[in-house]
Amino acid sequence: MESKEKEKGMDVQVSFPEHLKGGVYSNNMVVTHTKEEFVMDFLMVSPPAGTVTARVILSPGHMKRVLAALEDNIRKYEQAFGMIEKSEPPKGRIGF
Image (cartoon, rainbow, N blue to C red):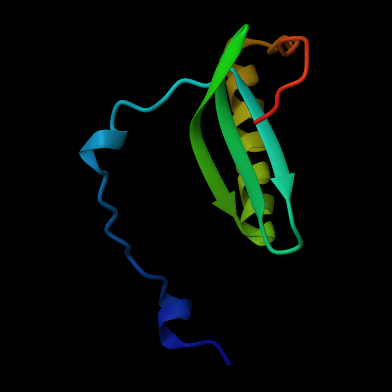
């Protein structure tokens, strides 16, 4: 039996820390995983160097929801603006 909160849904107030409001730029990403989590490292690569600009760690279930949300938003974007051409990542090996 589901709880009353789950049946009704909950409003969640989210704060947006000031230091994150500007966002970060990423032109590359490395994804790794274990059984318990996915790790997405977003990078700004400008050969011969690169910098990790953000790291996001997700549970496998949440990663599936992120993937579905990205696919849905790409579909909507392409309906509004046309097909996105896939670009090639920088050549070479990226390592930490």
